[in-house]
Image (cartoon, rainbow, N blue to C red; front, side, top):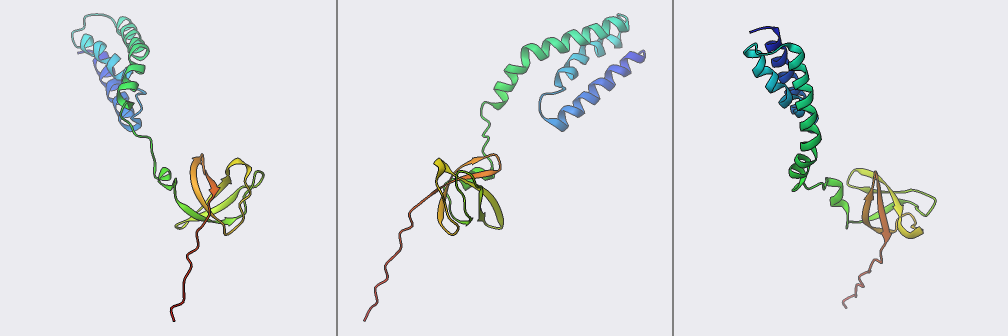
Length: 155
């Protein structure tokens, strides 16, 4: 076994570790592309220049033809909802005023969120709003009517 055997083994190990760390199909193509030159180098069949060429060609072909397919298969059933999406539909009280020019704020739990009013509405502090969406780090809110319960005095 010559030096290239260990070089290709190192390439496989490093690119596999990078892939495990990133989990984003970034270096798996190079890991797979290094397997063929790794096997060839074990038998001293061809020179390192040809091994390098095989590595580049196989890695490029895998990247070009399989990246889109594998992403589609892996992400087919992925659910991209986050905890923030759970805030949609909640009724909260405004802390500060929001309108078409001003970003207001609401407090949900212990977290104060920036809030923008939809459709250019003006929402005053202490008004109850419903979270209807999330746009980046801002909650999109709209005014809701709060029904007050009438309490009857019993005599």
